[in-house]
Image (cartoon, rainbow, N blue to C red; front, side, top):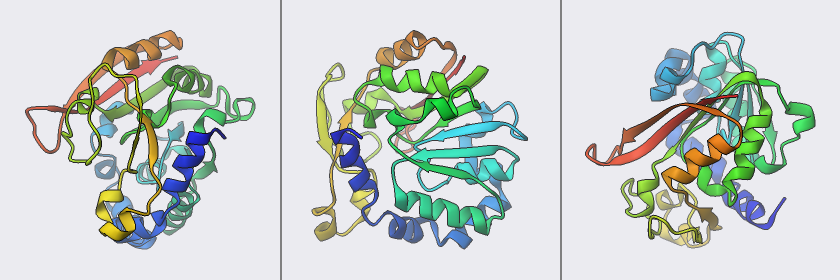
Length: 250
């Protein structure tokens, strides 16, 4: 595991389980929400799945299982790949409460065992701000390509690159020149929800933020056939872009 991945692991294992309980409920409370409305819990991402039942899904940086468990309830076989043991604990407890099975591999995404998982999945799915954790997007996309079966689908949803230049989503993150290739240090995603004394102690993350063209070209250069690139309005201001979703086929 490289140095910046170790840095991210420390950040995402700092009070993460307690954070999920505080913000999304106990595993049993969260499971009830998932059971009651799995499509609703998938939110806009449900539109990008052609089917659920029986498909094998790799949920990249799947965090606390917030999308993996609804997918499993709908009939998918889901493997979460994530760097945090705290996230695994919450996800597996929630899955048990929802009476579904998910697999959860705690690992550096760039070190996923492609001998074991190569060509295994019908869908590789990620959402909620993933790409900026990886300093080499081409290396990341090559692994995504390797995980998929021939004809498999990439669903890559992330923060819009326009957020490089302005804190549109109110994450309290540094902003920069849109075309900057700098590696920056910033707080982990939910640090702003902690009291200031705890926030100051939380490990930082090391980010590389990408432009639209870098993302699209990396998908194409990895061998994918890009099928769609949707932009979504920011939840803070519907006049500005806040997220995007790209789909591509192997």
